[in-house]
View 1 (cartoon, rainbow, N blue to C red):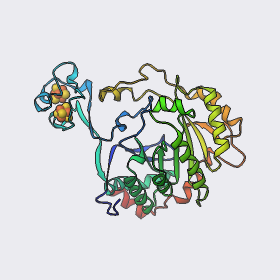
View 2: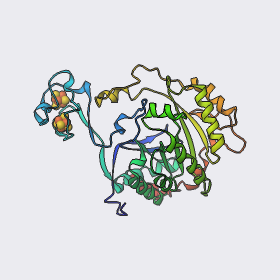
View 3: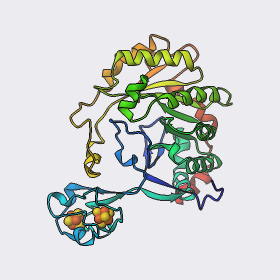
View 4: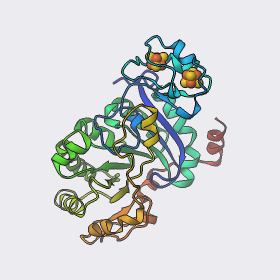
Length: 351
Ligand code: SF4
Ligand code: SF4
């Protein structure tokens, strides 16, 4: 790791500004590229590979053939939408440069810490008005820990509220350092059964659950305590089972006491098109989306046990004795949200 933020770089595949649906407030979302897991339901397949990739935007191809001429690897041939043969592609990006119709585009970009922190800082006035901030996710943030730490440090320096999303599958030391720089930590529990977890995601869950226990103890010692929000992605045909939820509840009750709340995330297949663009098979091709209302009975299983659970972006079903959620849900952020003066806001807006 270097302290020169101009030199530290990371690969991101998306920066989404003014997001209103991820956590509370207006947020800038930074998506890190690269993930050690292969969840069958992943909705961001462009975040799996840590390399910069070319995407085929099928409907935009005008059949000019410029990409075939530019490709020295012979990875493109005339035919249906001039698709890339991924086994031959070397990632040189020559086809992207010559494509006149944006049918070939790049997923992933190397950015310095200063570049990313600068983009985030431009949105600061919107954060302060809405109790928002930055959320860094992916992919998996623990694949690029130095970069993530430095961006979070810079945001802290700029008085911007910080959040991360993680699967927890990575180095404990890195996770602990990153957690110390966060106001909100979203942590996934994808499957509680170890063998099923391996089957669904490509890795066992031992490290993930172990890190979660350590993280729970760690945040308990922080003042103010960052919000540790447990997220349960629920996928039809995989873990949308009462038995799964009951086992998750048992794990939480037995091992965790400093988390803030539990969010149930209903599966959606919005990522399906992106698999096509990357020439990847999509395991959940015809799987029906889950409407948030369908999760009521699963939420109730948790709330009946006194656990503060809700569906993502939904209203809380119950509030545990000592934890308030919903309108006061993100109250700890307020302590760290910057109070910009009118003059400062003006400066930010014109940058
Ligand atoms: S990125 Fe791949 S498909 Fe495109 S020109 Fe290079 S080798 Fe060919
Ligand atoms: S350069 Fe672009 S528009 Fe032309 S054939 Fe290739 S993908 Fe299609």
